[in-house]
Image 1 (cartoon, rainbow, N blue to C red):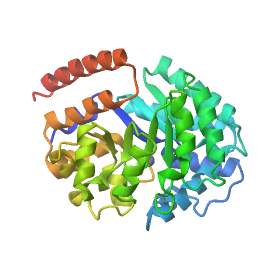
Image 2 (cartoon, rainbow, N blue to C red):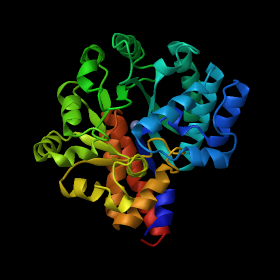
Image 3 (cartoon, helix red, strand yellow):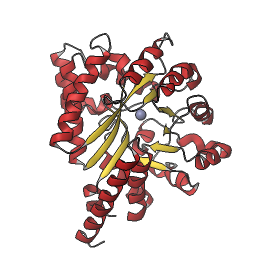
Image 4 (tube, rainbow, N blue to C red):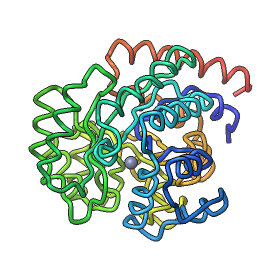
Length: 342
Ligand SMILES: [Zn+2]
């Protein structure tokens, strides 16, 4: 396995959550400073807390984490730390999901965005890493009409850091169709759709995401394999799947990494990127994801590089930026290959 190459190679990440990326130490500090009582008070207890029995349990803990964010400064801090960590992994560009509605009683949408943008601009200048923001609508959002508030606000802030509208939260019992109106409104304003689908939900959920929400990519989508017609559709339309192998195992989508459907997705000719989703919650990083899949499935360096290049192609960057980034990455790949004698 080409461990050093994977650690050093330039990367992009298209599916990672800001709130789900909060460093454990920072989460405990935020809870303390904001007077939020968590059921854990040490890093060891936190690691134990992050053992999920199912998706509902995961969401419950996710909302407890979100509750610790109470001020604009909190947003700036977690975004700055996130970007520092991305930079340390040589992740040059990230598409980052966050859930503004969850926080709006403490911090207004505009203040959340302004704080995250301060961190974004600073990281771009000082670390040379970029990110695009994907505010998402939680499927649990009620009344559903409030989804229009998120969609309209996201559309108004295109060009101010926001690049797409996401859909997250529990798939079961909350089909994408419920939010068709909000996504239509956003798309009319030019904002692409990036829904989660096909992780805990089956093919029907993915069909809903592509047919009703016109998904530009699918977050997860691994359960498409249950429907050969859907696999053909995704392949022909080149709708890419943002796959998070360790997260899928942690949430019981598959029992072990060795049983993860990633090799089958590739065998079917589907386009896939590799992502960490909620890294500390799943005890992973993007680098770890690449190391684990290379070890578990024996992927060679050509396949690993292809995952990275898929990420550039499937990103929402401009065509020109993609072209420049791909060329930069290919030069760096070659330099690393000669450095490590590969
Ligand atoms: Zn996700």
